[in-house]
Length: 111
Image 1: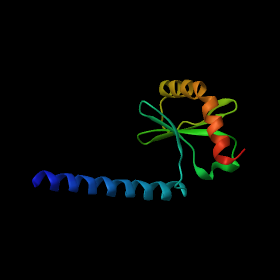
Image 2: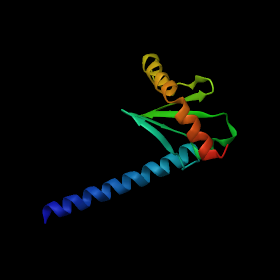
Image 3: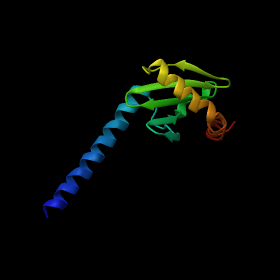
């Protein structure tokens, strides 16, 4: 019985946390649809549904850091608090997956 209560409380906590995160993202970016294209280690590669009016690019987040890379050609647009050494590693990942990101961008935005 106690284990069931603990599991129920834990699930409720996770649901609240997810709702808070969604609300914070909406407030911070004004956009809630953020398709994840790839996850590598602790990095999540995504774009915002409202990014249509910009050239193809990808956002990369880890913890509270979010960088942005243009995709054609691959180049850093904003570092988002990442240190240079880590940005070099992230740029390498973006270059390795550039075709996948461009394909996902074109598929999502219908280009």
